[in-house]
Length: 335
Image (cartoon, rainbow, N blue to C red):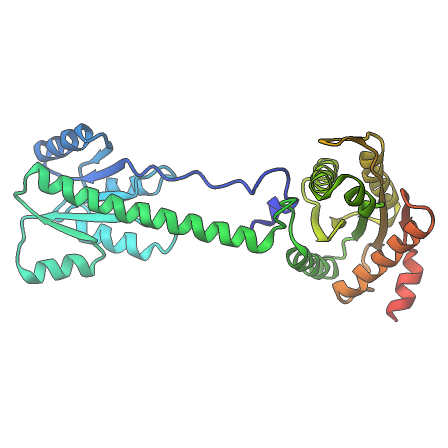
C-alpha cells in the first residue's frame, strides 16, 4: 500500500524498506551443550546467530524489528515449547514470513504431522549431523530469498501503478484519489482545503526547440522545485503532460495566493540548467480554496474544474502568473 506521507514524490523512487538480513538465524534450544553446538555450526557457515534457551525468550526475540526470519526451534522446551511458538508465529498475521525448522527426538509419523500442522516448514529428527542441518538451512534460505524477491516485485508494481515514471510524482489517478479523501476529511472536520492546477508555460516550444529529452529534464526540474517549496504534508501529482495538480490541506483562502506565488517564483526566478544550456521557464497557476467549515464542494470534479478555470485565466492573462478563483463564485456555481 502506498504511504500518503510520501505523496509528494520527491527526487528518486519512493524510499524502500530495509531489506531483511537473510544471514541471521534464531535458535531456541534448552540443552546448553546442544545449543552451543548449533551456534558453532551456524557461525562456521557465516550465519549471525541469536541463541535462546526457551520458547518464551525466543518469542520475545521475534518481536524485535531486527529479528531473524530463519528460526530453529526445539520441540521440547520449558515455558513455551516449539509447537506453541510455531502456533504463535503463524497466528501473528503480520510482518515478514518466518521460516521455521523444528528439531525433535520424536520420529513417529503423527509427530511429523503435528509439527507441520503447527506451522513448521521443515522437520529434523535428532540426532542429525552438521551437513544435514546445513542442507535444511540452505533450503530455508532459498525460500526466504524467493519470498523477498516476490515482495520486491509486488512493491515495484504498486509503486509503478501509482506514480508517474518520468517525474516519480503521483500519477493522475492517484492524486485524484488523494483529493477525494482530502475533500471527505475537509467536510468531516471543517478544515480549509486548497487546490492548485499548475501548467508549464510554452512547454511545447521547449520540446520543439530543444527536443523531448530536454523537455523531460525541464519537467524533472519543475518537479524538484515544486516539491522543495511545498510543506511536508502537501501532495502533488502529474495531472498530464506539463500540468501538475497540487493539494494543500489546511490552506485557507487568505494564504493561498502567497503559497501559489512562492511556487511561481521557485520556477521563474532562476533559469533551468539543461543539457541544451540555460532555459528560462515559467509557470501559470490556477487556485481555489474552500473556506473553513465549508461544505460547498461535494466532489473533486468541481474543485478541479474551478482550479482549471483559474489556470485558463492565468494563461489568458499573459502566463507566469497566479489566478485565485473567487470563493463566492465557486459557491454560486455549486448551488
